[in-house]
Length: 581
Image (cartoon, rainbow, N blue to C red):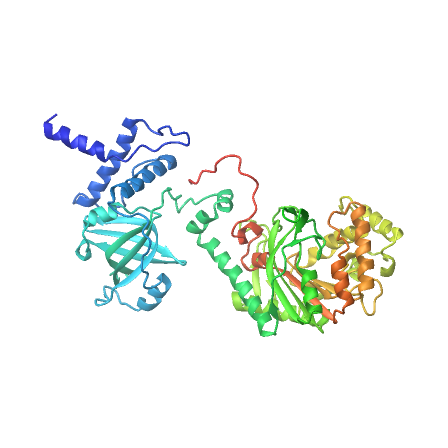
């Protein structure tokens, strides 16, 4: 070995990035293995700077050093740390001035003809690199993505400016990196709208090896690492966009009708407003056990008592119940309360709101939905055209079961409970303990009415024993002026004429307390503060609630609620989940 070669190798050794360490400070690679990894990457960078051999195909892709994900992360992390220590480049600059978004770039320059350039124009854009292709030593192509569109970057040595060499700049950029580009809009001879950069800046390196765009990632990883899911899957990002469109439409609809948006407490001393099992928490300063809210209903009605005649709230609710395809422990609802209205008014409003929303977002009243997932085979065509079908709960159960129910005003008796218990046993309707009248009725409705509700259907006139906050029916004793709207067998909204008699409200709460004593941990307790507010006078009022997540599922053809939540609840991950395909 000559003295010059020895000197060059010593210099290269001094330039090696430090060997990455594990959590206990031990080297992850031997010196020789790390030297080989760094040498391979250095050769790759030198090759990129010099350009490929003359016989290389114009479609040749960037050479990739074979590494497993762990090796790639260690290597890339060390390289980025090396950039920071040497000052060669700032891999995390504070600012890059974006002059135009990718969608606006496409809209503004989409009319360029093939081979045309916007010569006197310099634009600055940014995005994530999804692919990198090397055509020659003087030409590279990137696919830059952002806001669900793609722009091609055609990096040409002849247009390159700046102090760094063309090859060195582009050897630094990898798939997954976020980059900023300044250059000239053009359209290639093959018709691809592109930008020819004069400058390319690394804004945030991707330290992990992105999974293959062909194989993607499995469902478990998609739900646990939503950021990775959104990077790779346009369909997942679009579901979040539809969710936002639904909430925006709903908020605009209510604002236009004179409603006031408000906020109410998320922690309560009593978990009221809905039949559900709450999460418990503890207020250290007050030394008080509290509950995360299961619904904002009682506070919103107290605001109506206070003179705010039309109020609504869009927010999170928390219910300590099962996690399944249609339930998540925290979820988003909209509830509104409208003075001087009843449930008949709300049926019309619901038809107008839901049908109009579907038409505005989907462009049609008809929506295809796959209840077993996109690969499940069976599908529904849900028709949201108004008016929606209406069915009366007890009358429909009597018709389907071919039996006469006890008078609705006697459903609070033990005889009525036993009748429903026997009916469920006879028809093999499953109902776990406690087998209260309300729970038995709910299971019968689920098995015999809800299953037929594919197009939007209002199930109306619930018994009082199932509806502690709803007002009694004007013409049918024992029933209430309440409806639930079901779509594809799932409830999307619940509404009723509000009970505003404080004495009757206390009686209803007392019945709920009996159910809780019988073991129903979802039953409501007596809320004296709310009852006292009713004593000041709640005007005739109608209340309405809708789950945003369920509706989003139907409008995005998602049979799993996790698909429409940015960060769904998941069981603890025992083992690290690999992010490779």
